[in-house]
Length: 384
Ligand SMILES: Nc1ncnc2c1ncn2[C@@H]1O[C@H](COP(=O)(O)OP(=O)(O)OP(=O)(O)O)[C@@H](O)[C@H]1O
Image (cartoon, rainbow, N blue to C red; front, side):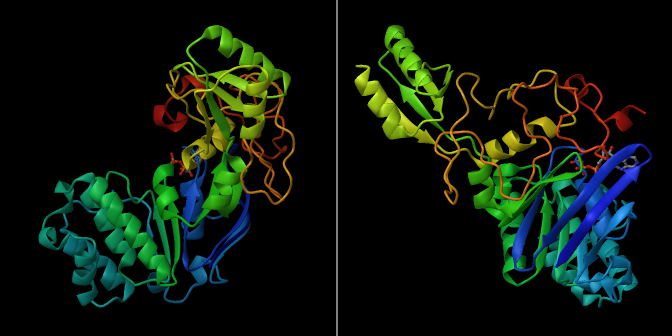
């Protein structure tokens, strides 16, 4: 098991990770999610003893990585697939690691076979594609047959077959009882791969729960309502539903996105108003929508022209949905539910501040405010 307690990392004035506490348990794939620059790699480096925490600590099996006996056989990691001597062949690269770690040379051919690189084992890695490089990195992580595995963006650059293969590999490793911690930007992929999620934004913990609970707690479910193609009918229904407390958002195809009311109530109100419905369907937010909703204010680097802007946002009209009864899994067509015991430091305030403003809920020692997020598509350090 990996356990982080109050993990904080500051680089000068920049707080990359702030007060992170979580556990990564064996026998499951735990997805590590967060927008660019949210502190995922920094956290993984601290787990692996490559960076010293400013505050807090992190252990693997109860001990800091650097104090583990026989660490290469207990922990395997893929952090940066490009960190390979390009002049060496795949086999030579893995042999070097094996020799340094006291791992028998025969294991090299085993892992080359496991990742599908056996036919190019003698080729120099500088000629490898991005996907082949990822496979070589994964082979390096598997070399010591470790019980704890960390993968930073393992599907980066892989084709669909490769992504499918990584998914199955992660699940197989977890089924064998290993601790598997995987960071990814691909939400849809995490939905298929991970059992549990740890989500961070600007270095802080946003969620630590099962994939199922994450969607249920963070999705703003809504109903799609379609009337006959008559603006007067649509207008009439909008007024009636708004009057009953619903949030209404017109869709481009003429349908209405209705939040805050149960489907039967929408149906009854439409019937009482004499408006016929051609469609009344529930919409369950996907993991991607739930994630976008949660991290929306925690995105450091956003394109100035975001075609997905507005995606997953709360409906602009009407009051918030009434509080849901505890224990319900699916919020019925309302706003995201607060997660018990979990504070979202980036929760959207009632009147959203300008993009570059610091969210009001941020604690004093939180990461520094982000400069001009809406116009800075690249990391500040990239410009140096
Ligand atoms: N050595 C460093 N010196 C200064 N700042 C750093 C250093 N390493 C990371 N940072 C900053 O800390 C923050 C977190 O970076 P980190 O690479 O951990 O994020 P990430 O979630 O892995 O991002 P990405 O998904 O883009 O890889 C970023 O703002 C980054 O610029």
